[in-house]
Length: 211
Image (tube, rainbow, N blue to C red; front, side):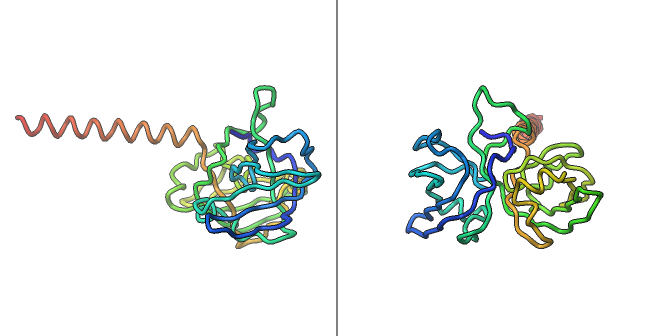
């Protein structure tokens, strides 16, 4: 579990394709001596497991499913990535609950200046648009953002200078692909309500068949 508050703007050292997916190496300013093998690290919002580490570097395995569902397979050496270590009970929850399970790939539609900040317009897959809520949360490339101005599959987010400096979003341009994780709580609520509606429909159909 993560918070969507990025801890390091790292760089890709290597991305090696394997039969099962890929092996990713990142160069980071995080204290790798405090990161154990098997720890979870969110890379651009995708939860990966650390399989090797050294001074200033971490290596993670990337499954074929992760490559299909995220932008990680498009990365090249030197590309910047957002890193966040997993949430602990002593860590402040400054953003929102982020699972690190990317739902799909969206894109940047437009970027407009607003003083020193920037207004980003994003577009998400139709399957994720149902979870967009005014003043709700969404994780874009692992960054916790507040949603507003929802129109269909598109919505806006205001990014302050600090976020632009400390995350990959400051390097994005219109048309860029981004990893999208919809609000975890919203997905569970939607699932439960859908299950109840299905159960009511089944009960109703049963009674109707007996009358």
